[in-house]
Length: 370
Image 1 (cartoon, rainbow, N blue to C red):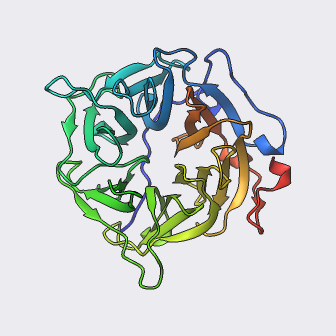
Image 2: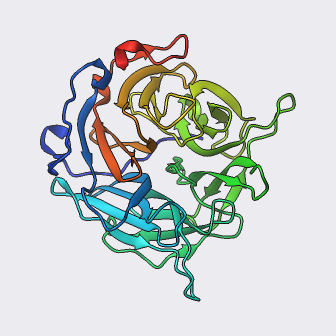
Image 3: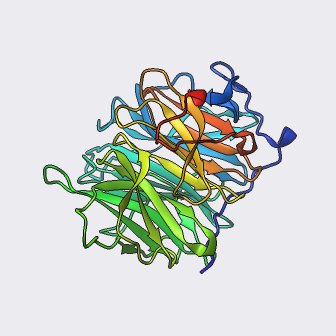
């Protein structure tokens, strides 16, 4: 089956780059090899009615970019909801809350990990989780037919289906949606397990597929996969582990079956990553190139999904820069949103033609890109 990444349609902008004009904290065209490729950088919001923000998602619709994240007093607090901003007339709109965890009996649970995905000619989908914890949460979805201005009522996903757990879905050429997902068990220590959910009817019904077990290796605790597309329709998923390395698993049949999970050469500090296959065939990953902490935040690129070259440093100061989301828009630019110190969401625009990758034969981030 042919597999193609699907992107939305965005109105043409001056010089092909969205005119990001929001005031303050813009860092345009940073100088130095470490920042070669950054076309624009800004915060999605400067002030907001919440103390903590995390786990952003970004999508391109026919009307422009839309981003969402969860925010409230702190992660896991009952007041945490899903907040959203749209990129209109060169600026991000004031954040609005578009989903809460309020139940029919009045109880309110926290919301978690929104994922936006635009199905061309159908609807913009907002997946998110509701529940006391990742061990007990459940999947929810809302849809919009006007690029995020208005939304349908929230609908709970079927039992056993969580939807995309952190990263965007993939649409196959036949319209099938593949949602990268995972579970965290309630035992201690929690068992992490990756799986993939497929729907052929735009989310009405779902089937789940799990990577096969390895006959000669211990199980790898892994969550939060992100899907790449390779020649011939092969799929590769990368994601988070407790093993200090990014994991991978491969599928040759459109996500129906997956090979055993193994570890890549890329470091991982037990934090979320995201990746995207570019239209020029390269693969791009945004991740923390470290085994401890959530700084720095880095970008690497690969031709084959196996050998990765250092490409860009997004953040290196002390603090938390984490949980990236990445897409390539129809004008060719790469858009990354990520958590900035749990206080804000930063949006960075990358021109992939400007990147000057540097090999990492020893696995260490090259000095010239620090």
